[in-house]
Each structure stands twice: as C-alpha cells, then as structure tokens.
Amino acid sequence: MMNVVDLRKSFVTPKGERLEVLRGVNFSAADGESIAVTGPSGSGKSTLLHLLGGLEAPDHGTIALDGSSAGHHVGFVFQFHYLLPDLSAIENVALPLLIARWSKKRAFDRALELLQETGLAERADHPISHLSGGEQQRVAVVRALINEPKLLLADEPTGNLDERISDQIGHTLVNYAHKHAAMTIIATHSPRLAGLCDRSLRIEDGRVKD
Image (cartoon, rainbow, N blue to C red; front, side, top):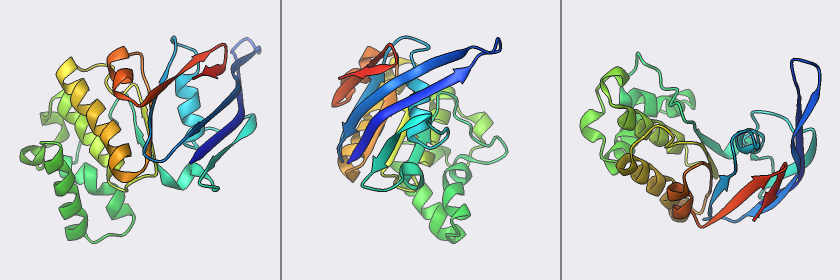
C-alpha cells in the first residue's frame, strides 16, 4: 500500500508571488493497482509524480509506501525518454543494473530478456539514434522496469506517439502492476490511456477527486 496524506506544494513565480499547486492531496494505492492521474495542463499532475518519486520535497504532508519512504522503490518513465545517445538499446536498459554492481553478463542477459518481452530484441544492439520515437520510448519503459520497482511513475509516457505504440506502452505499464504486485501511476491527458488503468484520479483546484 501507498498512503498519501495532505500533500501540499507551492512554487514562487518570477514575480515573487507564491503559487499553490497542490493544496492537500489525499489518496491511497494498493499493490497491483494502476492509476491514471488526469486534469488540465498546469493542474499539478507532474508535480504530484515528482513528489511521489522523491524528485521534489513537499511543503507539507506525508507519502508512505509499505510504511517506509518511497524513494528507494521507484521507476520513472517521462514523456521524453532521456536515454543516453552514445549507448545501444541494451546498454541503456542494463545501465541501472551495472550501476548496482551486477556483472555485465548478468545485467545484459536480464536486459535482453525484457527487450524480448516488448518485441525489441532485434534492436538491442542498435544505437538509440537509429531507433524510432516509439522504439526509444519502449526502451525507456524497459529501463524503468529493470530493477522491478515497487512504484512505477509515468509522466505523459505516450504524449508524442501514435495510438498503436501508445496502446503497447499503456498495456506494458498496466500489466507490470498486475504481474508484479506493484503500483503504476500515470499522469496523462489521454482518455484512451486512462481507460486502460484500474481507476482514475482527477486533479482540480490542487486537490484529487477519485
């Protein structure tokens, strides 16, 4: 379980004014559950994901994942893939395991296994620059899954992709939660992607409506 209680976040504008983005967000997520976070641009969807993943600190409130800090159990997928262009697909995917001091063979075997599951095995040795936008984003998704995170956060992961690739990525993210008893939380403008999730939370006026 993850419990979010009275989460608040504000920012100071260039004019020195304080802008309240999140004004007391409360919700819970269960193991194996996928949740879409919807709402208009600027409503705080990305801010919420950044707080959940520990990329930013809240002004107030708590985030508890199985009674502990969420920060060590998180995988991220962003709208822009942030892959390393000088590395191949398999090298990008294996990188988190290599950083964790896995042997190169073990890390590459695991990376290839996940690339095979997403239909990218034939592109494993290709430089990132030789892959299409959809393939690059699928590699980014696999990289986020390689450490089997307890909490998977995706911020507009299909924003620039066609429906077929978007559906593939959406199903991968949702199925990961179901298969691994993890939690997947996806910020999206896409009703199609939100419809794949178990439920949706809508942010309005800095608060969540379930």
